[in-house]
Amino acid sequence: MEIIAHIETDFPAKFGIPRQSGLVEELKGRIIFEPEYRNPDAFRGMEGFSHIWLIWQFSGTKRHSWSATVKPPRLGGNKRMGVFSTRSPFRPNDIGLSSVKLERLEFDPELGPVLYVAGADLMDGTAIYDVKPYLPYTDSHPEASDGFAGEVLDYELAVVFPEKWLLMIPQEKHEAIIAVLKQDPRPSYHQHHMPERIYGVEFAGFDVRFTVEDEVLTVCEVERLH
Image 1 (cartoon, rainbow, N blue to C red):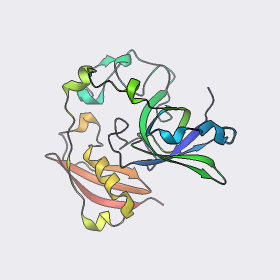
Image 2 (image 1 turned 90 degrees about the vertical axis):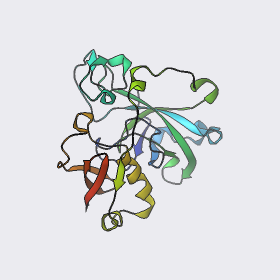
Image 3 (image 1 turned 60 degrees about the vertical axis):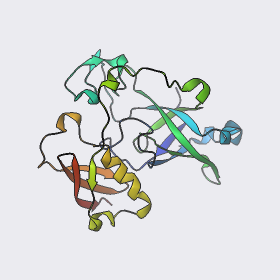
């Protein structure tokens, strides 16, 4: 398969990226196409769609072998399920699938057609293999069952972000970083443990460090990375 584009996001590393697309709609991304795929005709009609599918490569989880079972984060990372029953990145083929909101399509004089999206769960620089429109009449199944994933309810942490640290981050990214922290970026096997441990999420050029105790996440330091 040919790489047709790469996405630009605020996540230079895997840690902190939401577990699913659409969980944090405040996260913005920009899809830049390779020169041979910048023909405006290839995007004719796209402005009529509110959401799109992205087919992409798990660039941060390269492996030379695969396992029939994995440990889903939703189950605390201590129970194995079949790889085809999960969305784990450790798969026979390192392919990801995300549904994102298409905010707009712009034509840049140098980059050609650029897609601006929201709710992406991709690392910065991720290679994209294809873009397809999301069709609610066939892609949405409200009556669908969610298997073992529905056994564990999602929860949000309360976030304490002292103003002196928050003001270091550009204002237009405040809502996004707070929403990311609410999702609890820690590995599942660390959750509800080690309140003294300091974690760090690299986001938009900053290292945001925090601790968690009693479902309250407290930012303790922000450092500019560049």
